[in-house]
Structures are given as structure tokens and as C-alpha cells.
Length: 320
Ligand code: BMA
Image (cartoon, rainbow, N blue to C red):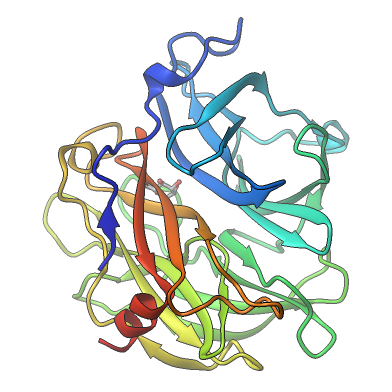
């Protein structure tokens, strides 16, 4: 199970600087991407203002706990070329492939939600590369290198409609691409488990490469309870050569809303992980078993929180 950082939440709306005229007295800061860049912990924050408009802000830290937020809204060069502008760009996942950083995010349009891809080399200039889903999708995460010559990602087609929510989904899929821009589905990977904690599901932060396989943290939503949807966190382990093949999957969640900041807020009962940092990997990029993992998660769609674990514990969790 994940351990909460005792001084949670680590970023609250009060810490978001006013950026006139868009952000004044921010409403929320939650589902945020994370990566190590130039020995700093970097977050791309999902921030909302009182108009419930969405913005992305950069934050950095030397220790992973105390962040400085840059008072500048991230602008995606090239977005203006889209014929229809999205309402929101949100839930960023950050990936390093060679010396480039790719950011995959959800984009809300009138016709539904799509996956978008952006790139940065310096976390100062950001370029929008395009919409990379065919149809309604969310929760896309890239693998850090090609496997058998192809780029891979986990994604989540939105094929289920619940009361009062955007379309959601009960299957995580593996998709493949020759160039990161054109994707096609390969196979379903895991399905929701009706009546239990993870009925609807979606990938969380990007997959972690270990000697045992790809560790994937995901969120599961219990939707069978009378009055509420509960967003929790779990983990599965997938085959290194064929990530559509699941080796083991946690029976129970490893983080669920219990603390006040997870139980109350804009959307109650939500723990939603989007970013993680693995502290120690070997020369070939495999995470070390004793390595600490810092997991950044949105709590109640209002604040950003941190939970920690180790690679060894995550593998064990996936087997229980
Ligand atoms: C999901 C996504 C997340 C959000 C969660 C809870 O469907 O939209 O961004 O945190 O719902 O509201």
C-alpha cells in the first residue's frame, strides 16, 4: 500500500500565484504530470480558475516535496492551427524519450475527449504536435522506448456513460505507432471488475520498467455505490516484451480516499495519480527493487498530494 506524505497536501490552490487576468484566487490544483529534469523534480500542474477554465503551470523542486511555481501559463505553440479549440487540456503525463519530453494529455471538445501530444526540450517552450486518438479516449501513457521497432502506449477508450459524467471506460488497451502521431489499437490489457473497487479504469502515471516487467499504476472507480463514485489506485505488472500480457494485478486498491483532503472538495472521494518519480535505476534503465517511488496524485480534484512506496513493494502489491 502507498504511504501518504505526512505534510500532504503538497500544493494547494492558495499556493498558486495570481496571473492576471486569467488566474486570480485559483480554485484547484490537482492531476499533475511529474518527471526529473536537470536533477530537479518537475511538475506540470493542472490548475483551474473560478471560471472553471483549465491552465497548465510549471513547478520545480530540489527535494520532491517543496515546489516553486512559475507564475506563467504554459502556451502550446501550434494549438492555434486546430480548427476547433478545446475547452480544456488536462491530466498531463510527462515522458522522456531520448533527450525530448513528450506530454500526453486529455483534450475536451464538444464532440468528446481526445488524446493530445505535446513536446518540450527545456520546459520553457512547448509545442503541440497533434491529436493522437481516433475517437473518445483518455488516460494515455507512453512507454519510454520502442519495443520491437514500435512506440507503444496504454490508453483508455471512453465507451461507458455514467450519470452526470463525461464518457468513461472499463478497459485499458495497448496501442502502437511508428512515429508517435499515428496510432492503432493492438489488444485490450485489463478490464474493469464489476461490483468491486475498479469497475471503470484508466492508466495513471507512465509505466515503470523493472527486471520483472512493466509496472503500471492505474486508477479504478467503484461506481456501484448508491451516491458516489470512488476513485482509487491499483497496480499491475505486464510482460517486458509484450505489455498486453498481464503477469499480476492487485486484488485490492493500494490507495483510497480516507483523508479529509481526499474526501471533500470539488469532486469528493478522489485519489487520481498522474505523475511519478523513480529515484534509482540501473544503467539500462531498469528501476532498482529498493528504489523509492514518489507518486503525485490529485485529491478530490482540489489539491495535489504525494504518496511513496518502493519498486519491490509495488511488485508485491501487484501479486496480492
Ligand atoms: C476523471 C477525469 C479526472 C478527474 C476525475 C474525477 O474522469 O476527468 O480528470 O480527476 O474524473 O473527477
